Amino acid sequence: MTTANPERTPRRFPLPSLSGLRPALAHAVATDVRERPRTWFSTVRAALDRPLTSYYLLLGAAALLLTIGLLMVLSASSVYSYELNDGDSYAVVQRQLQWVLLGLPLAWVASRLPYKAVRALAYPGFSVSLVLLLLTAFMGKEINGNQNWLVIGPLQLQPSEIAKLAMVIWAAHIFAHKERRLGRTNEMVVPVVPGMVLAIGLVVFGRDLGTALVLIALLFGMLWVVGAPLRFFAIIGAFIGTGLTVLVVGDAERLGRMSSFLNPFADLDNAGYQQGHGLFALTSGGILGEGIGASQQKWGALPEAHTDFIFAVLGEELGLAGTLLVVLLFLTIAYAALRVARTTEDPFVRYATFGIVVWLIGQMMINIGMVLSLLPVIGIPLPLISYGGSSLVPTLVALGLLVGFARREPEAARALAQRRRQRSAGLSARR
Image 1 (cartoon, helix red, strand yellow):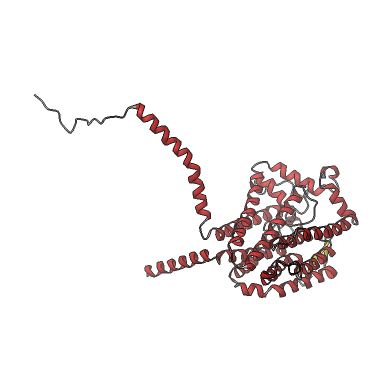
Image 2 (tube, rainbow, N blue to C red; image 1 turned 180 degrees about the vertical axis):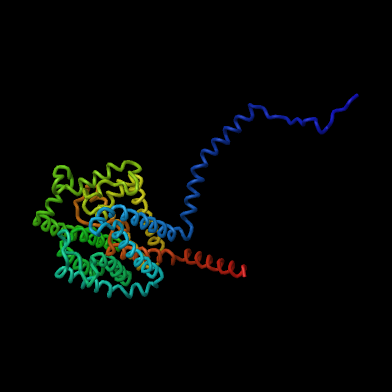
């Protein structure tokens, strides 16, 4: 009689019946399907609730926008630069890169300045900006019909761009100082409204209606965040609207732009030329675009391709995906900044943050609306994307302030301090 080898005898395990397995499997699948959205939502929520989220969102979005801007200036200005700089296609982007190299250290300094130092610059900065605007109104250089450039030796700049940052800091400083008295309308109005209206008037005197609209939006935004009554907006809006209507009707060029922007193809050879070719660029880009450097409209058909209408070239070369990415990055900056404004206990930080968001997002919307023919052509650059140091440097400084506000949040400051201690401990351990 032979016995089976126990090493070769397979072990047999009882299998569950199929009738019992199917309900259990169905229940597990249904439970997984129900809980999967909650898992994704909780993961995103946990990431957003981290102490350094606002800090990294501001840094990342600003860095990506600046990188995209340099690439688009390189591409959009290549033909223009070749024609005006004796065959040098890189002259314009090299100047833009110089402005970046100037603006980044200033942004870093702005992110490290104590709040008292920033607020100490409020009145001097606003006073200097008013003097520059006054000099520009009477002694400025006229370009493309707008007397908004001031020449100081070899330097040519737009004081209205500097005034945007100065107005935000000045108004935020005053409102923070009056925090407990802002329940009275006269405390909201004086001296912020007269001062900002004076600055807007000087900009309008130089025929720069585009910048004036941004400053008006900034004024309205600052008044809204401090709780100004609705009737006050109606009064100021009626006054400003009447003034703008008089200025537009009294100028044939402005009137032509206002009447042609809804249908630029009706007068494509004249008033609608720029917006019409901007729409040609956007529509030819499709979903993914023609590729970096492949724009056709930048070959002389589209005026200001590397400045005010760079968004059209971006849409042609990067397509709908690229334009949506740029808009999403601006909205990311706004989201992160408003998180800081909502959680801070410092009124100056709250008002300054909101003012910077209104400035950047308002200017972005006006520029894109202009390119999409939703607004008339009013000469507004796209922040961080368009060519120009006068716009780029103040914008970088403003973003530096936002980054500084974000890194000084109590939880963020503790997280950064703990990270520095861990790095120091790691270096000590290696020794």
